[in-house]
Length: 190
Image (cartoon, rainbow, N blue to C red; front, side, top):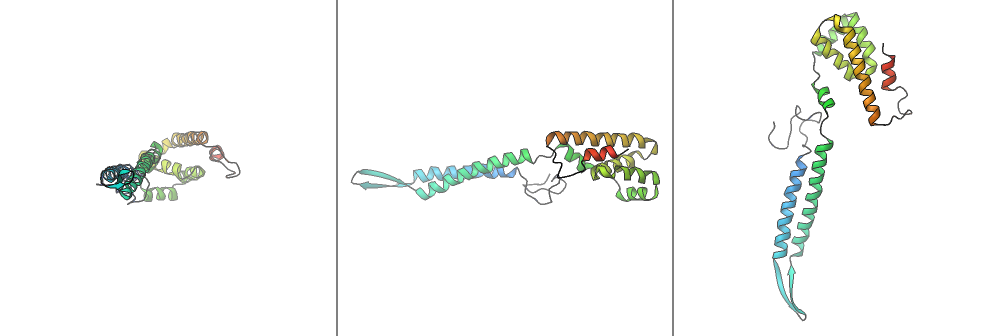
């Protein structure tokens, strides 16, 4: 783990290297709340006793109290934003699984180039997208046996369908946006 709020590319879960960790805002918010509280306390305690014709009046340090109030309010906003950013930007299991798909791309490219059967399957899976092509490449290179090709292709298409159905349930599809949906691409794949 990296020390401090800065994270490395490996830890970033897809964010660019050197970006600020979203959860750090909550700690900055807590710090601002603390500083603002101290300013409010001293702003109210430090003052001037002034005599007027209506009696003695205690005049507080208004600028210090205003800065303290703004600091507390800013701290609360930062804290809430920090907590929400951690919840919203937390990587899902799917996105972390996508990031861990790794294979020897040179070996894969050579297989696709010189093995007609692998090239045909890769061509058939291409409409499903790069995620599923990477899944196929990684799985095939791990097994390295053509006897598993039919089951491998069947499982990838099945997983692509499940993924599509899950995504369709989450968001409503706009037919004008993409005339050919992922479901139609999956159906076209033998």
